[in-house]
Image 1 (cartoon, rainbow, N blue to C red):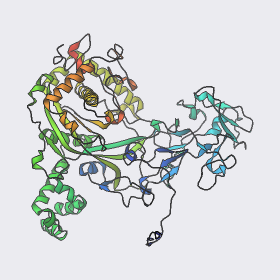
Image 2: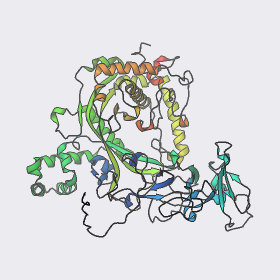
Image 3: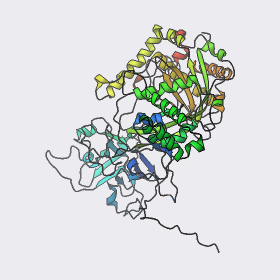
Length: 614
């Protein structure tokens, strides 16, 4: 007979035991099911609670100094991975609170159904309850249940009459069509049955004199915000019901060095001593902790690291804007990618290795491609800064950033990806000469004007909305990255969603980094780095540009004068250069394959037209 397992001795007060409802992958807590999002678990719906209610005692800490400084935090935490015996986890709260019974068609608050303990079912019919398909939200992130009672009783209440009718709400589906017209709401008080048709119009709720409630159900004990925003009706699973605002950064020297990573947990103390000029204190600190002996951390080496860090933080004296810190991050990365970091000069645990290819890159000269680099070791940190509702965070727009916690914390949820990539640049003199073409400038101007107009329409203050970043250089680099990702997806065997672009486009930068976007089996196998060898890269460019010559949607695609949301694309569609949204930095916007290969009427518009033999 097998003896019973030994019991663990309890220490301290017992923690409250919460029921477990489903699970998601850690990466999804940053990109798909982050704080404030709605998660469907079986027949139930929950909202992920704020980070100040997470139990992260066992969650690993992620350090990325450059990104942490920009976001104003000390570190990042990986969302906890829970099992049946662990005490950590991410708390959720039931939302929406209005449910319906598919059998008796009752529509009311979930508490009124008298569900048995631990179950979400109708107390009379014993049928699983269905969470409301509809919610209302505003651009400031507030969200609440849809006002079914006011919707059903609209135009059926006498002027000045107040209070509820005392009837019971009903929700049923006629089944005649799949449209909102078939979803019918009624009340036992006798008002005529109404459909949900028209509930999604921009003025539907304001016409009912329904105002934003200012509720933030993802934050425990959050006070009601006074909000003047107009609420909108959304589907519970709609993509605009929760949009993550994610900031990313690459680990580059000196922060990627193995010596620096071993000091990360001690950096705050060392910085204070360095800024005070206390070299003796640094020496004693390293000796007491055993760092100097065990890891060969001499005071001189630590001071050199801190000095380099301090110089990087000072940045440049350029004009300061909202995006300046993030632009500075990109410029630092660009300089490191251009300079490289040979594997022979790095440690086994260094997180950045970037080398020149073995063969000569001269074979790429006809394409104007210069400086290809093989990024054999790469670490990217992606942090969830905030989220938005209703308004989609397009490039550089001023969407409202809803907070992840009620109290300000010194950490943010994040994930890290260890992978590899290929970095390449375009010849800047050839780029400038090509961009001066009247036809090229006209196509880019059309994209930029459409994008600027869209941003101003969505901005709260249109007069101060930023201009679009679309320029001939930026659109060309962006479209080239998409073409190469599609090519390597077909030729290299990578799923398109496992690759990700990182653009470096400005007056002083003209490069793209294509790297692995996932840490699973498609993340780091060496296959992507092999695509960066010049001879192989030339074949990839040949094939990618040849595919871009023809789209199954042509001639409509290549002759388009504005496609996509807001007309911010030209010759670009799902049949040619669009990618999974996780692979693109600009939500599949600001693309034009005509800038790669030209148009039938004017092949010279294409940057690569000469290489293609036009």
